[in-house]
Length: 258
Image (cartoon, rainbow, N blue to C red; front, side, top):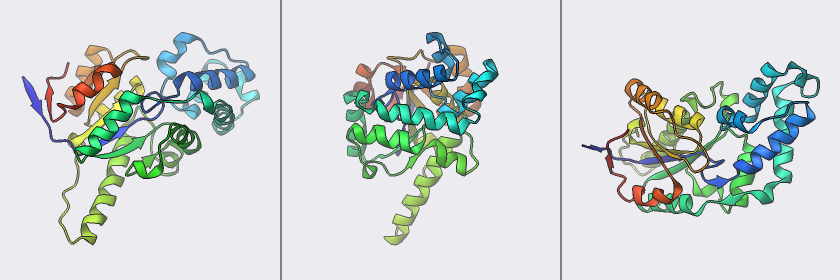
């Protein structure tokens, strides 16, 4: 069985997907959490990965309310984490396999955007250190912009649907200036590249095709993936980075999802 979809937009997560920043992020967040008296354990990252620092604060406070004595708001915790991450910026690395996929999609005339649960200062610093520029992406959408717009973070579909809305606005304006008709990109024409389960759930709930890089994180449980797929029509393909380019080269005719 083959499932054919025509793709026009690739939406990339940042931390752990475009850049190898998750080890740095975890060290930074763990350092800040210890200042507040909370010791994050290795298995805690099974549900913390991809959540964003403000949401992590909410989750930690539920377990240890005393954390609020040091960081009384999510914003104060978020700022402390950002400062610690910037201090560790040299630990961020570009991921060559993913960089090749970005260039490949552009060669195939797909638009490329970034969508992250990280705040602007954090995500843009990591992207810049890895050698990316703002012009490399048609739009960039980060946690603080979502918050300002009253939208929910991943694992909700809001970030990916809002990014798609913004891309359609940009492309529509360009086509109008050229006197050409524009047909809006639909969720079914979008690819999402993620590393965390949090991001995968967001992309699939948006009705998009999600590629999860599973080198550092476990894939979704098969039953959960099938349930989300049945409800939202999103497709799901977990794989290692080494498999990514081979998969991308046949991206317009995809094998049946799990």
